[in-house]
Image 1 (spheres, rainbow, N blue to C red):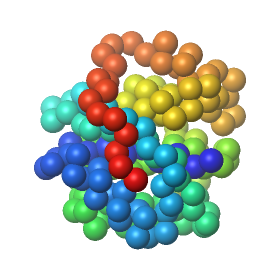
Image 2: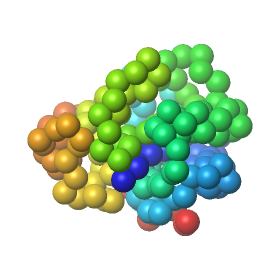
Image 3: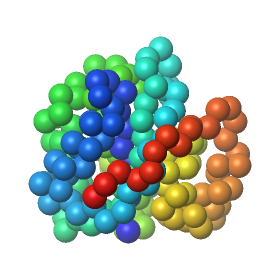
Image 4: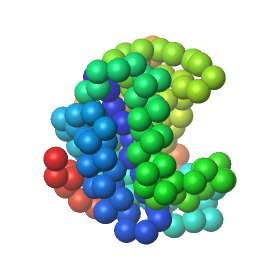
Length: 162
C-alpha cells in the first residue's frame, strides 16, 4: 500500500487539497481512499498560518523515486516554491509509506522519517488504517499517537470526494 500525506496553508487550503488530488489523478496516481481533513498548527517553522492535512491511499505503477518526481511536479504546477524549510506552501505532498519499502537515498527516505512524530499525519493515517504498524517498526500508529506531546490536530471535515 502507498500512502501520501497532503498539506496546505496558503490560499484556499481546501481547494488546494482537492486540486492536488485532481492533478495526481491526471498524472497517473490512482487515489483509492482519503482520510478526513484535519487542521493543525505549523510544525518546524511556526510563524505561519495553520495547515489543512489529509492522507490518501494511492496506487502507482512506477517506483518510489518516480512517484516522488510526479508529486514534485504536481507541487510545482500548483506554485510551490521551496524557499524556507518547513515554510508556508500552497501544497505539500509527501510519500509516507510505499509498499512496505525501507529505503534511504539522497532524495528519498521511506517510510517518511518524521511521520511518527507528527499528529497531522498520524491521525488522518489512523482513520484509514487504525492498526497500522509502520514499515520496519514494532509500534502501532495508535502507540505513536499516544506519545505525542502538545496539541493534536482538529478534524474539520469528512473525507474529500474522490
